Image (cartoon, rainbow, N blue to C red; front, side, top):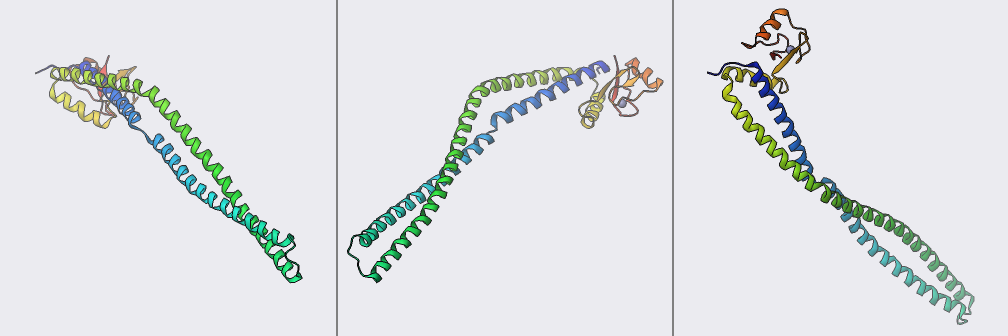
Length: 235
Ligand SMILES: [Zn+2]
């Protein structure tokens, strides 16, 4: 049966806290390595812009052909009107009306074309922005990933080293003390053993009664803080 040493219990806690800290860093490093949400967002934006651009460009080509056809009709109408072929007042008036109608329609279609071109400019800017973002993210990935992979490897080794150190420590501690340690650790954010400094429990900062302090100083048995229940350790 191993004899109780509060110091060894405290050493175990130091080791466990370090392991938790390394494990947390490892989780963060792995999350960063696998996080491609920024790339996915930029990619989605680029695809959306490209798809809309393709639609708008097709619409622009259609409107440009419509303008072209209206120009041809206008030229034909003007040839009839000013070519001297139409002389009767009624026919002249009808041709003039036709010409005015074509000019009005062309103005309307050209307005639509202008609006479309503004939209196309905006979409091109959006697509180029997303492309730039993707390039930047790729550069960053190339720069960051080797460092992160190295850090991941280091943390895996540290966690493993601490696990082995823990396993070799366990036989040195009485099972009942270990069980109590684990129980308190689970409810006190990993801190089951608290140092006593200037008469205070460093776990909850309460000033301990003299009897508790004295008992804790002996280090022979487990003395728990009457306030936070942590195992008291006097250095
Ligand atoms: Zn306490």
